[in-house]
Length: 112
Length: 114
Image (cartoon, rainbow over all chains, first blue to last red; front, side):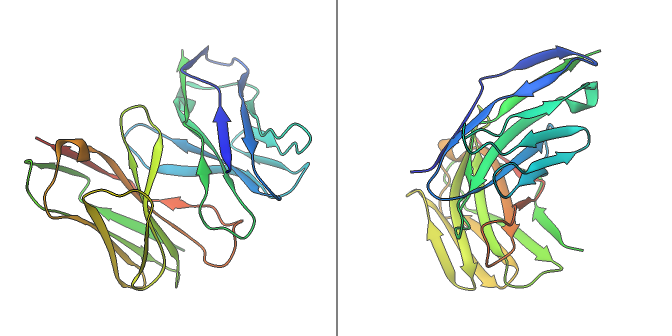
């Protein structure tokens, strides 16, 4: 079946550091890929998405590129802020299905 | 624009008591609706999903049930809560008809069973 694997957290960075959170997936067909962010005590919010190979999703300084050859969708940001501290979830939605598969989440802690 | 409302925000219930959590969506019609639970450790567990009124699919057998009495209303219930039902419950919706549609989550209900 479909699966999403994220790097274990927590990821701890200083403000203005470069961020990478790795995400790889296993799926049949051509899924859409998503990153969600969850701030403490809140629900998940869509951060960005990509629907086909080589698409780049971007939002709020975060970027991720849909790499079909490496089945990856790594999240990056050039300069993190304290306010980026949250849990980040990678997810896929198989084509034609409305049941997404989520990774386990990666906690990001940014220190001033 | 579409909005999702979930309540209550927090709930403390004794073991053996009933549960009813409600979720409503505004600004869209015939959404797909979902209930997730997030236990300590952050992972999301899909409990139920619905593609239409009265159509409920259960992903995990347990003492919880779900109902969809109206197009944009989704209710999570239990007749008798267990300690293991404690967690953070999230309702979500997505646009019907395509797997490209992301999920939109409510702010969650923190349930503590004592």
